[in-house]
Length: 296
Image (tube, rainbow, N blue to C red):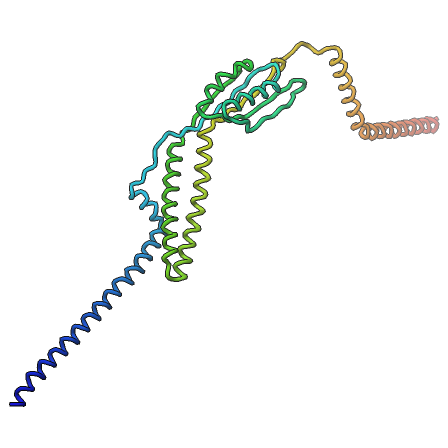
């Protein structure tokens, strides 16, 4: 009887112990699988993101996110004009003052004389909406001999630059996030290298965009000033004629100086040739005289 009672208890204890061990193993297996599921996924996510940055995937993500760049019209306007005035230097000063009133500036100016005729030229930049007004004002300075304008549409270039700049900025932000989450030195070095490359590209694109923006905002106009005295005038005066005569004499004197050595050589050659010729004639006369005496 005692033996029969102990056997069920022993079997029950063994079953309970086995259940406990199985439960513990199941929990450990679950914890192990959960840790494996998290760590590899983190490494894979970093690797995929780094590869995407290296392949330029940030630009695609930027477009996929639906970020749009406004397609406003971007036009660069340029012009040039030639004006006949009484005093080019004064006209240049007045032009600079007018441009300053319009909110522009003089980027280049020059003054010189051709003979006795003064001339001047200036390249000015004014707000794009003031270019037509400045061209209409030029007749107030003098007679406009020539005038032309040109336009260059750079809308596509500016839009493309803005989109690429936005993509690079997004890429740089993601690379900075990668660097903050990097767990190894290799990952950090890789992210820093890509960040440096992206930043260099961003600086270059920003410089190009700044240039286009400046050219669109301020139009360029080049103005040349001449005088009516530039046209052919009357015949030379007595003073100018006398000066021309003296210049001609000076030119002849210089030519004579340059030719003098050659003239000396040629003169000596002629003298030597004549002396030789005279000596031969004397020899011939003497020979004839001797022949005559012999015959007699």
